[in-house]
Image (cartoon, rainbow, N blue to C red; front, side):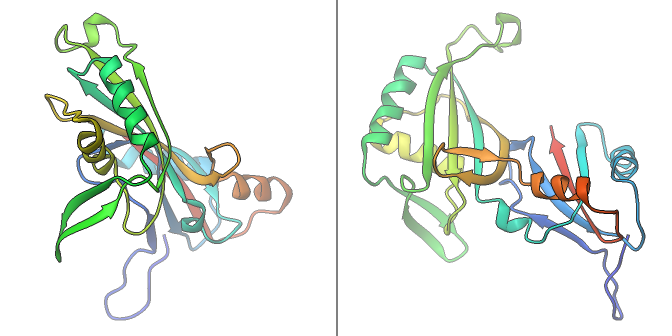
Length: 222
């Protein structure tokens, strides 16, 4: 691993757009600078072995293009709402999508801030939970929301969207939602889908000789 220069060298590791505290994720990305050429798969295995159970390196590729952070323009989230009827979730989603703006408040280090949570949302869908009864903590209903949101400033997080659903439709889950990021990458504006941010590096690696440099690695915290 490469280190910075100076009196207090630090590993050259760059984290891009980390998930909010309290959420799960299957799509976190980081870049590690190396001092010599390494096989990406060998690097993945070595990193994976050094991490605790549940925090897995699922892929590593050599960074052949710049601007990984610039390719993380949107995220796909799953919000599991235990105790919420799917029909109630569908009505709340319809009300949210029909609104031109949905103002929510969030406490920041500079005080309470009000902003629009609607404009950053590319897609929001509701569906019943497909978990088996054995996987459920109780026999209560459960709704699943699939959220696609742009990365904007200020950031619109899943909990902001939940606040928006409460504001427009009085949807208030009886227990905190279980939130998991499923993907993040470049937003395809035509389809509303999020594409793989490592694809340009993977394609370049297939046509160019290997060189020493940074390696982009995708991690999947449980």
